[in-house]
Image (cartoon, rainbow, N blue to C red; front, top):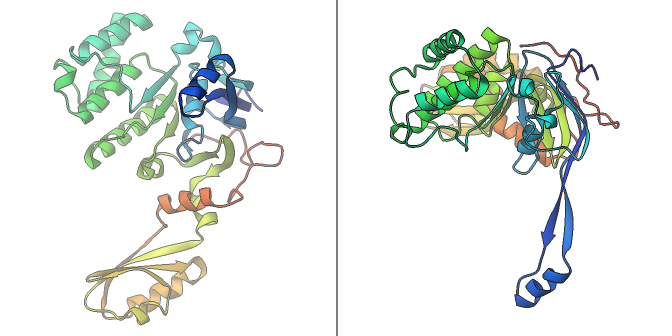
Length: 350
């Protein structure tokens, strides 16, 4: 694994826990005092991948797959049980000061803002923690205010801010020290559609301006589709897929969807001549068509007077991920038997 050219290099990472097991009831409680039974849980198992500087990578998996555990190991909050990890040239678990200045971890369900004080106080605190000079602080704060539009809200008590406003201030607080590696765990959770778009655009602009490496976990597939050309998929702590997002979609669902705007009533049997009918309701319909039959299907549909308009789309990413997790084998570019990702380790930045 080419660690020297990688922002993040993970080799055979494992993380296990011993979980105390006890049956219900008073007698079982007493027995557990003298003789405890433990079960070993593999949160992450033999995980390997590499991420180049400047990449935006989606880190995906179902609940309990090991995503947050992996991010915490990469950020140095957890020690690995086995394997090797390097981030920005450092071993995360050592928690060296220079390492902490190069990374940030933003968790959508946690906050660092001081609840009864304005975000500006948290910004000042982080400035002191990271030893940021006056000139650099003013410059960075100005850039973040322009990108996030937080100048007017930074002096309000945090408890008076909306969820979206708090998330913007969380991002500003996390990026004051200009980290080069961003670990983002559900950064848009609970936000409305407009605020999700705003946060995504900010992450993209920060990545492009700073060439920062971004690792994103999210259950909102729109976040992943908008930001991450490459995805790493894990399930039950093991690598399932590492590669191009578009290739994953094509390999799991080798169909296209044709969304139709209807000018009048259309017989279902007519639509079934060109593909499977996914949706049919007054004014619109959705068909699923094989990739190789797409051109012919579009030509025929456009010739029908009751078809006012059509658009071609990929199947929803949520369906692709659900089908991938339900399958026995990874799709597209699977991991090899040795556990190494099939994708080249030195993939370029997006």
